[in-house]
Image (cartoon, rainbow, N blue to C red):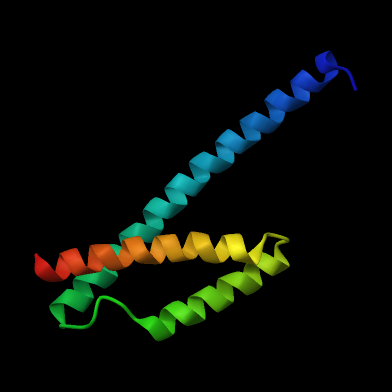
Length: 97
């Protein structure tokens, strides 16, 4: 394949990536709207910001989903761990507000 024939496919793939990135941002926004409400409920009822048992279950579930989707489970775990850390930070902030 020559450079000239590869460029249209490259543009098409990049356009798809841009659309997927936009969808991910909106999905994360929706997820954080839910976790914000969880944080408010936890603060209101004096529940801990973190739930290690649930976090462990979610990581295991996501690893299985990643495997089934042909995505590296290690990457999926790192991604979810990053999100969980941010959610816990929000929950701590909600409790101290």
